[in-house]
Length: 292
Figure (tube, rainbow, N blue to C red):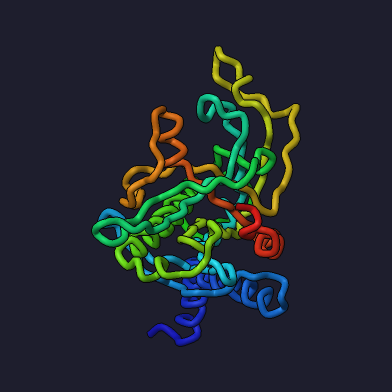
């Protein structure tokens, strides 16, 4: 018969593996910073159920910036120690006629029409973030570290980005169905007049970046030589992620696209801040409506 201590130990390991401890420690950090008046991000809900295109999920947590309708949709990813190096590089070609990268997030507003109110999706762009924006993210396996699971975590960045995108778009779908959540909220400025949703990944992984121009790869064999470029650690960064149509909310866009590059921006490119434990305090203190 299995002893109670053995069950307790296994339960402890399961909690760790599913990341509950990390999720609620991030929330506690956010709460402590707010209480100490070192951050204006306030806890709203956790484990909040949403759905997009028949795909259900639960949002790890939602934070709101005080006195606004600016929300963080948080996804917490406790990385398997064996797969805890997340490495990023810039893509040299993203879209035509764009010399700078912007932080692109969804902003949903309601306008009056003959039938009442209708939802319109706008795209907010934070001023240039070239120094902190990356497009390609890969997980590097650690050679001499024991993993916690037999399952590979090589797709951890893609999975986390897809999950937080599904969660953010699910929240937008909910607001579309329940306009009373935002349509009567007072305020004339952009942030207060609608709903702005920022998907954010919080992870225990270490974040590494390289600014090498990968188009300089050897065209004969396709190999890249990173040896002459710096490889540095970041506390947090911006990940430019192209969401798939299956994860996209159905709110109509208010912006007319005449080029493929505009469709990419308006419909699919979304910026996901990825934050390590070392960057949580700085992120909560410095990511705010003044950026928009």
